[in-house]
Amino acid sequence: MVAVDRSSLELLGSLAGTGWFEVDGERNVVAVSAELEAITGFRAEEVLGRPCITLLRCPDCLKQCAVLRRGRLEQARVRIYRKDGGEVEVIRAGAAMRDAGGGFVGALETVRLAEGAGCPAGVVPQELDVLLRGLGRLFVAADEQLRVRAFSPSLVGFTGWPEESLQRSTLAELFGEHLFGPDGELAAAVREGRRREGWQASLPAPGGGRHGVSCSVGPIAPEDRCGHPDVRVVVMIRPDESAAEEPGETAAGYRGIVGRSPGMQRIFRLIELLRDNDSTVLITGESGTGKGMIARTLHETSHRARGPFVAVNCAALPAELLESELFGHVRGAFTSAVRDRIGRFELAHGGTIFLDEIGDLAPNLQGKILRVIQERTFERVGDTRTRTTDVRVIAATHLNLARAVADKRFREDLYYRLRVIPVEIPPLRARREDLPALVDAVLLRIGRNHQRGLRLASAASRALLAYDWPGNVRELENALEYAVAVCPGQTIHLDDLPHEIRFPLPGFRPAPDPAPAPPTEPASPERDRLADALDRAHYRRAEAARLLGISRTTLWRKLREHGL
Picture 1 (cartoon, rainbow, N blue to C red):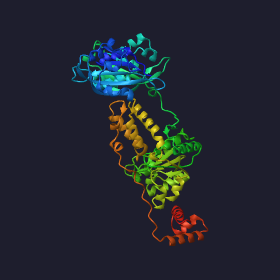
Picture 2: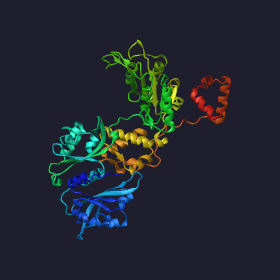
Picture 3: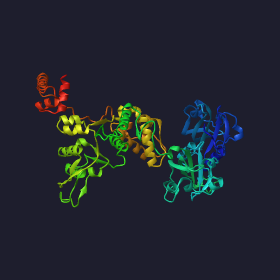
Picture 4: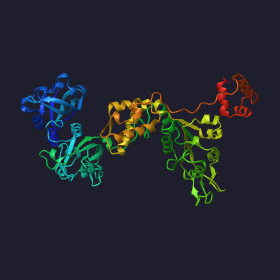
């Protein structure tokens, strides 16, 4: 249930030029502010204990109470009748109060005259949101030097500071120099007359430590101070313990990787089984599925965790530069080789080397990678000295390497050396049960990076869950980064999401690898030829493949096609 701090509302109402009233579970008025008395012309004693329609004569209220129906009302522009019979246009906002069982026990609404309705210049409508979101929360009011001038009485118990200490404190002492110090982001916003909403911070807690909070800051113009001339800024505070916590293990995933789905749970179990295993791992999956994260987790959970983790993107450099990057070079090996350079395999000694996008490796390098995996030996470019290295190899690719082997674009022997332990990461569209937790985790991480406490409106959440995510987790991260950048407040709405998520193209999917070419000879002669080769090789498939002049992978595929 929302606890209404009426003394706080009186101060905030006078600062913002905003009236407010409270009703009970029968929608009878139980409290009215002086500001609302001035707006409506009704004195409190005339309406207390009577239905709210007595105080706020709004034609829309006669149809159905919006606060009762929806639970809250945000920035509704309506016309009301004053006591003297005149009409006036106002901006209303409100929130229902409910008990622990969800039952309606009352409501609180704010009312301010709309622009041009004869009211003095007041705070912009967004400040009313700050007031509404602060119901039952805490506030601090400060002067131009950001010294505390007023605060919620409950702030004393929340922080553990004595009242006199709070009265002598500054916003920087409460929230930290990084927000309200000379170079603080929120201090700069106040100086420039800007509003900031949903910033993550922390307040000192009783007995040490700090309470995580989300704070919204609104500057108060001189004409809006209404009897509080020293006040320049109001900070509304909402408890948010996630702002002070470090991300850790959750039931939704494993070591920071989100995944409740069966496919991801199998990967987590496999990682556990490989803790003491140095076998080479080949990670496959579409672009953006998190292959690099799985590779790093395999390293961090292994007995090599104290050693280095060295990642190389095999698609990022041309072959001649990649060879030097992997194995190093000696001075004079080529024109720009002015000094000896150590390669990534040497840097990874005692740890793990991660060969990302291994499917794009040039043919001349495939043999050298095969050698270092098999023999743990290599030579630097331009050198004759053979060197050794003790590394575990983890490779990853978004390509179908078996198809690349069949098309003779990738060495078969290297493929089998890499694929000792295969790990296939399912695309995001195949594990939709992971999406809600994944969206929450990504939004929390991005919010922390920007020091903002953020949430999703229901329409935005539905759009994210309905989208197919052809770019997988990487696309999800980029979409939420975009939404956070363009979202002006604390809630991300549908309009804040990228266009392609709001209006997805039907049936869009990433282009699959090209299908293998069909057999060039009739099916029955080919089947007979395969059967004959198997017979002559005494059903040893490697020998049969040699007789036919094809790879073992191609032989296996053809045998399956012909039911052999």
